[in-house]
Image (cartoon, rainbow, N blue to C red; front, side):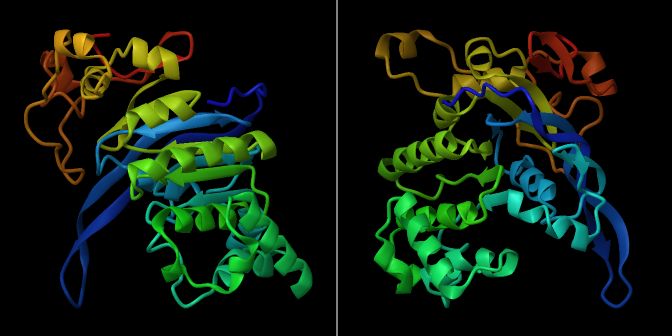
Length: 329
């Protein structure tokens, strides 16, 4: 885990929403509802920090990352990057900021164009956003390949010639090509073998130290999130339920959903593992097209009371840099 010594806020998100319309009709389509993938989230990331974002599949983690980078247009809310509000900028104005924000995608097999060579894939951002000559670009691509632990002479090879871990390294090299400040890592290790995951995470940490990078690290693997993150956000059904420093969250989870997540993480000590109790949640995650009233989690919560189904809890501060959205905490 890299500790950020910089207190300057690089990214600030205020009440961000992303709703996908549900339509009916073939010739004339009309909106009959919306899938509330991200439903009013607010947070900030400081320069040089790694913020982990965890939650079940379908809770809106990846959509949050893509909406921040304007790969999806936001339904509502504001995104401030270096105090510049970017969600309402014109495409031409946002183009100048694009090099400072990059993304590493989840699937290293789908995120690389199979018809382009590795040199072309990594060099494409340099063609679009810089005025480098061909010789300079080729030299930069070779440096980037060496930086992520690949042979610089691989530039003429194609993605199918590489393993999953090597492809993800190529994706990391592409993300670094324009010297970004912020990289959103969208589950960058979930499609990789366990033996390769640690190598990729260690590479990300090394690059963060060298280039003072800031990460939003989206993942399912809580042990990996604990290893790499400074702070952690827990997300459930489009909303944030808890935000805390990584040690605080893992040692003292306060939200019932966070407690259930933590109880599912295996502990490499048979004595401790045998004594601790598991929290088994009942039912399935509700549909984001029709979320429950009040607290999104109340229909699965083991300690829910009447107010939970009637009023939505606000994300309020409980301790030093510890925020929880629960009526009973």
